Image (tube, rainbow, N blue to C red; front, side):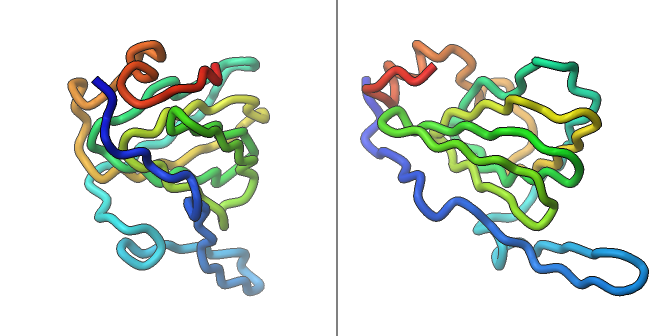
Length: 144
C-alpha cells in the first residue's frame, strides 16, 4: 500500500551561521531555528573506506540533519518520485532528511567527518533498508 503523503524535496538545505576570528571558524546550529525538530540522538561517520557507501535506507518516523564538518561527500535523496543530489563539503551547510525519504551517502573524500542529528533515538523498527520495499511503499520511479 502506497503512503498517502509524498515528502517534497524542496527547501531541505540549511546554511548554518558562523563566526570567524583569529582563532578560526566557529559554526553553530540551533534546533527549531536552523532545523525544525529537537535532536534526540547524534552520531558521526568517520574512516569511510574508499568507494564505500553509507545510508541506503529511509526512516519511517525519524528526521535527520546531515552535515559534513570535514572533507566532502555526495548525499543523494529520493522521495520515490524525484531525486536530489547535494555535494556536502562545508561545515556551514547541511541537509534535512525528512521521514519517508530514501538517502545514500557516496563519494567520500579521504578523512571526511559527517555529523548527523536525529529527531529520535535509534530503533531498528524505524528503518526501511530494502529499496524495493521502499518503492512499493512510497514511490513510482526507480533511481537506484
